View 1 (tube, rainbow, N blue to C red):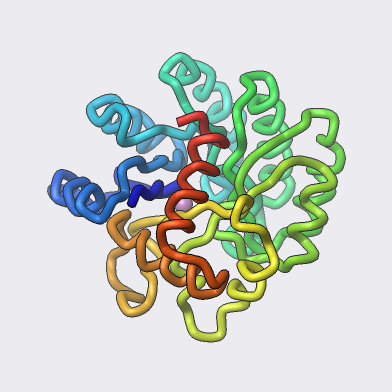
View 2: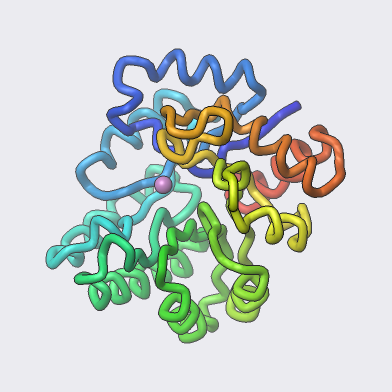
Length: 255
Ligand code: NI
């Protein structure tokens, strides 16, 4: 069985000194490819060099994370340009986060629009981080309908209705992670309603470890725990979840 982790942060300091072991454990669990989310210029060079050193296993995204959008966001965006030649598989993680960034709302919206244009210009999918900003996100997406965006809603926390709304303005899959296993999570209803062909597996490691590991450092080797929960909800085999979600990820990110 083969799995893909479509959103992880191996560059995070939580993995310092242990990256080799983390990769080995992922491989042993069948997680053969890991898409690395970009955050900002502070960790970008290291992230790309880890991807270069682990070609065919790690795949870099390129983008400015909403939590890293500040007054200097235009400088951060102009730094992205030089990295397109290093083979990013998506623009991400980009989006809106009003939970932590309420005071930078306007800047986040501008940065998102510019990065949507970059995605269209370079014909790349987008990897979206969205927290407490659904209405504004949908409004921007509607304005950008002409860009024919495709992508993935990372750590999706929205409703089935919002999923349907997203499809009006682009082609969006849902990233499903450890939250699916949390008590009181609304995500099982969404997973039940949305076709398997529109779901991708992800960890967001080192964050969001699934039950029974909740609260510990997450890693890509935990993907099969999430896949098993998807299989249970869908009433299909683990093998089918592995095969379909792997195909979905390879197609979207051209892995
Ligand atoms: Ni992330």
